[in-house]
Length: 205
Image 1 (cartoon, rainbow, N blue to C red):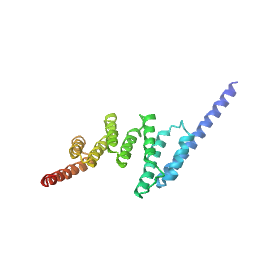
Image 2: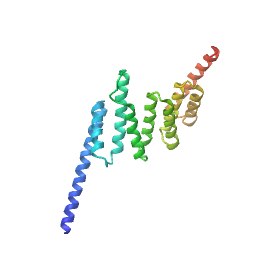
Image 3: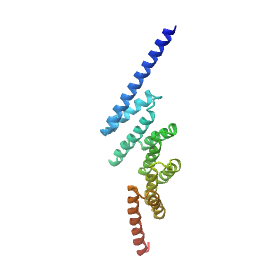
Image 4: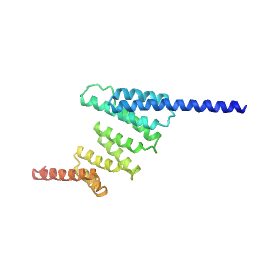
């Protein structure tokens, strides 16, 4: 009886090991395709992975990769000004949101929030982008992406022609992250906006 139990344990371990190796190989293939910018192939492989290995420890990695892949597929079609899109930016958002909801403690979670904001920004849904960036800042206050989210809020307000709010965001970047590269860019944007405001005042706008 003991020998049977040991044998079953060994068989179980071997099955799990093979399962893990197969999922790891599939993820590596998807990642390699992504790095080669073969996004359609990447997307196919991530779909297979998520359907086949639902309990994999790499599920958050694959969701993050899938979200980025779908964004780039949509962006490529957008750049070509296609009337009908094969890939929808909402699908990219769905991948990032699934990651964020299922794995809130994943290292990818704050980055997924930043990507959701980027998707909304690229899709010209500026209020949604601002809302997403603000959630990131509140939830991941000490994360390094906080400064980028704050800067991107400024960009959103610029697109809305709300220069006062844009300046406020850029000034917060400069005051809170003075040693960062993004702070230098924010300083440039502050000067640029103030010049625009001065020209508008002179022209009575």
